[in-house]
Amino acid sequence: MARLAYADPTKAETRPLAERIIRERGSVLHLYAMLMHSGPVAEGWLRYLTAIRHECQLSGALREMVIMRIATLNGAPYEAAQHAPIAVREGLTEQQVAALTDWQGSDLFDETQCAVLAYCDAMTRDIRVPDAVFARVRRALPDRELVELTATIGAYNMVSRFLEALQIDHHDDMTASAHAQS
Image 1 (cartoon, rainbow, N blue to C red):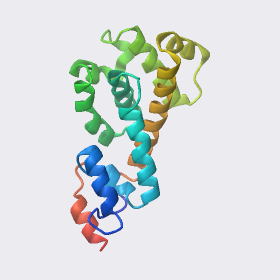
Image 2 (image 1 turned 90 degrees about the vertical axis):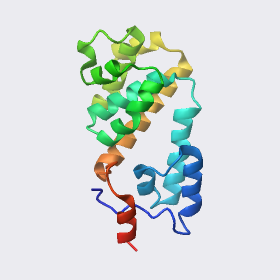
Image 3 (image 1 turned 120 degrees about the vertical axis):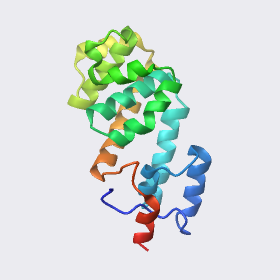
Image 4 (image 1 turned 60 degrees about the vertical axis):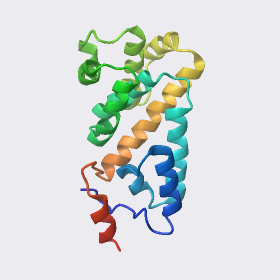
């Protein structure tokens, strides 16, 4: 159960943002129900993650692959549960998704994917990326996609850290939580 009650999306102060989230995302997920405690943060988050997920040239398969890897590295099951089906829709196989826990021991990833995963691991685990890891990913991607990859890895490390710090779980009953704070 989350450490804070989820914001009530039906309240006057949250309703317009909740309606926008529903238009753009289809529903108010647990993450956004928590973010709605701060309208400015929720709106900024929504805009930033919309850019990352829907306006970049980085392939959806690479984007979702790093999101799933970050979820694994950071122990973020909510993030993994939300993105596993998207990863498959974007072109990863279920075997690749499963192999992300030990991608270096797998032959399921091509050279570009391995370069991207090594970069993701370095950014997530160590923050500073060794020159050899950067050179490898630099050879694999054009500048714009490398910037978008870097922003994606940074963004989803932010997401997983937010989720885990507040213990957001996709099994939580958001309605009961919201009514408890009334």
